[in-house]
Length: 367
Image 1 (cartoon, rainbow, N blue to C red):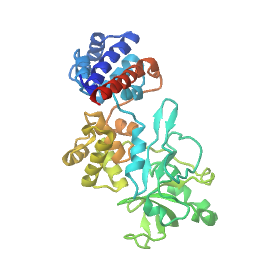
Image 2 (tube, rainbow, N blue to C red):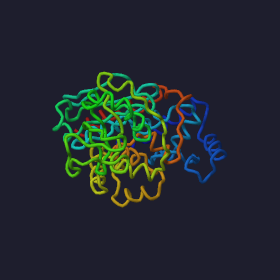
Image 3 (tube, helix red, strand yellow):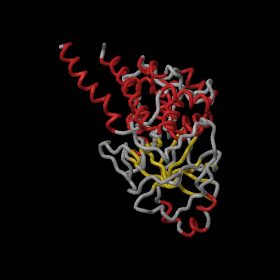
Image 4 (tube, rainbow, N blue to C red):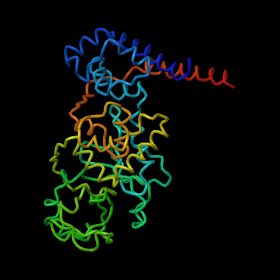
C-alpha cells in the first residue's frame, strides 16, 4: 500500500476513534443528520462515510460543518484533519498577489488571528488585533510602493473602516475635514476603483468627490464621484492617526454571486488570470483539486452556490482575497464556532505522526 493511500486508511481509522471519543459512531451520526437535515441535504452524512474517506473521497464542506456541530469540535480543526489548513489562505494571498494592492484576510483560529508576517522588508502598521468589522488588512502592491516612500512592496497595513458600507464619508468630510485639512492631506487611503484597489493620498474636493494624489492613469487629475466612480474603503492606521474616525456599521448582506464579482474586481484579475492563479495554487499544494476551470469561475458567479470541493473554496478565497467566513455566510452556510472545543491534539496528531514514520520506512525501501 502506497504512503498516500495509507494516509486515507489511517484518517478513516482516526475518524472512527474521534467519533467514539465524543460518544458517537458513524451509524448514529448518519441517523442524526438525516433527521435534522434530510437525506438529500449536503449536510447529510451517509452510513458509507467512513469507507468514502478510506477511499480518498473528500467530504462536502457542509458535511464537515455537520461533523463539528455533532461532535462539538471546531470547524477549522476538522478542516485541518482532512488536510485543509486555513492558514494557507493568507500565506498564498501574500505570495501570489505582488503587483496590485489587495486585501489580506486574517484567519481565525479559536481566539487568535493568523496573519503572515514573513515577507522580507515587511512593515506592519498598527499593533492592535483585528476587531470585528472595523479593521481590515491590505498588502501593498509594487505599483503603489513605487509612488510612496512610506510604503514598501509586500508590506502589510491596517486599514481603519472595512469598506464603503462601513465608512461614512458624509460624517468624516464635514466640519472636521475643513478645519483639519492639513492633517488629513498626508494620510494614505485605501480606494476601490473600477480596475482594483489602490493605496494613495487623496484631495477631498467635497463630501462626494475626490482626486487621487498623485494623479493616476487612466483617471487623470479630474475628480472622481463617490461612490459610482470610486469608493473609499478606509484610511491607513499609522501611529494611531485614525483612532478618532468613527465607522457606522451598515453591513450590507451580499449574495455569493455579488461577493465573487466584487472581490474579483477589487483584486483586478480576469477570469483567465484567475484560472492561471488556481493552477499555480494546485502546483504549490500538490493537489489538482485546487485548480478551477475557466468556465467554472464564470459559473460560480452565476450559480451562487458554494463549491462542493473544499479545495476550490480555498482557491476562491486566495485568488479573490475573500475571507472564508464571509464567503460561507454569503452562500447561506452559517458556521458557529463560539461553543466548540479544539480537536484533542492526541487524536488529531495520531495520523500525521504515523504517516511520517511510514513515509520514512517507504523512502528507505525505495532507495
